[in-house]
Image 1 (tube, rainbow, N blue to C red):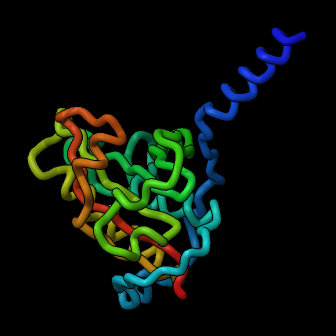
Image 2 (spheres, one colour; image 1 turned 180 degrees about the vertical axis):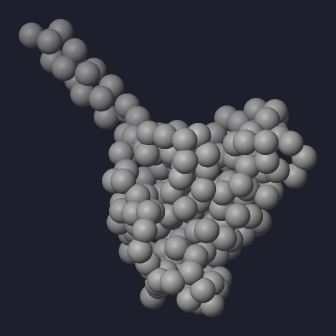
Length: 199
């Protein structure tokens, strides 16, 4: 009986420690405000509310940042189609890697680690932070920076269309990110982007 209880406890603990990946709903790839209206309303808002972002909105934002709009082609330019950029999502629940093909967030680290996602106070309370990371082993000159800039602008425009607060940043505790996510020397954090509802 004791052995059975021990095994049951072991399996319960093992299950609770397993990665809690997030399956995203299909992104909405049409609609929203007219493009020029969204461009006109684009701005950095560094005072987001703490309220969560729903999964549909998160899926839309991630698709705009680095999803696919053609077979094996991203919504943002990728010189020589190297696709050397990665988008990590920092939520209160953990840090996740966005997989656009699977339309899924793969959990990398559990827990609230928003303090490493930026050096500004508003980062720590925002429900969503993106980290744009390059794999330099695949890099072609400044290609990843082009992709990152376009991704961040796409996210800005979706935020403007949906009435969300958004700000792109370079102030990040990169050493802490590298250590926590066990990056190798070929990984470089380029920028972060904070997203939330407006207060």
